[in-house]
Length: 154
Length: 200
Image (tube, rainbow over all chains, first blue to last red; front, side, top):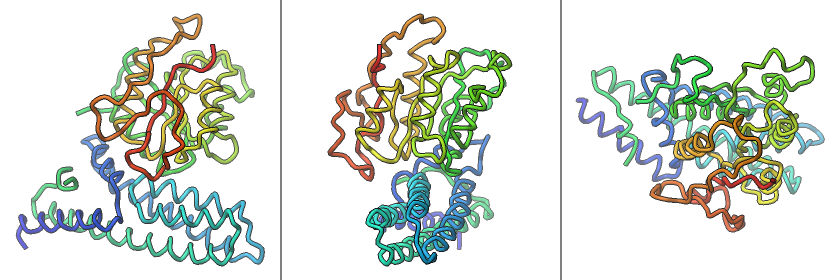
């Protein structure tokens, strides 16, 4: 595939993430924070989000699997995940967390289990899509092309 | 292109030194970059307790060793385990060394009583998360305009919050407190609240 085509693919792919609501405008803030002094910022912060989320989801699973669920513990985890997903623009994850928290408030264990599954689903989706996005970018760069922040905005 | 890592001397009056407090790894990274891109020197810590240690307010040692510590702005998350942002704010305002330093609270939740409580306690402003570059730029302008805190013997009235001027990407409210109709998932909702100090 030639460079121009790749770049078009990247643009289309990126656009689809916004159209599907997987990402929101906060994600567009991130390239603005990248410059020569920190040329990898977007991928760094996204990686950090993945690491952080993996940990939180693990802790959440453990907490919800307890015989007696301690919502004092569960809610802060969801709050954390809501915060970090919001900060990088992972809209669907954030929204799933909002729903999750309302069930935590109600101390509804069964609903919370369902919410956890939903959050996981959305998380794996955005993770998968972002990993694909970065791969597309890498291919472009490897072929001598350049990625500009404009490619991510529309 | 702004570069945050200027090697100016610590006493450079043009470069703001900001202490950012947040328990979230992701948010710390983001706020650090937001501030650096805005040409601020940044120190990040992960808790209110660490912030107090950094400022020498943890009571273990006197603050004499930190006489040269220059912090122009403290930005802190509200919901943190241990010391909340509000509790940190109180401790800072109680200290003689740092009570003049503007403190801005960040929160993902647009809860009126919470905001009011912080403003009453002396917070300079409140930022709704997720924080955007425009928010930080505006905040920086406000802080730089307020001038050097040490020169003021009393609380001067900082400039009123920059009303929403030309920036269409973030909307600011008037300084009235009516944010009840907004929820934190609305992109165009009120993002920043800054007003003259409620006390004095």
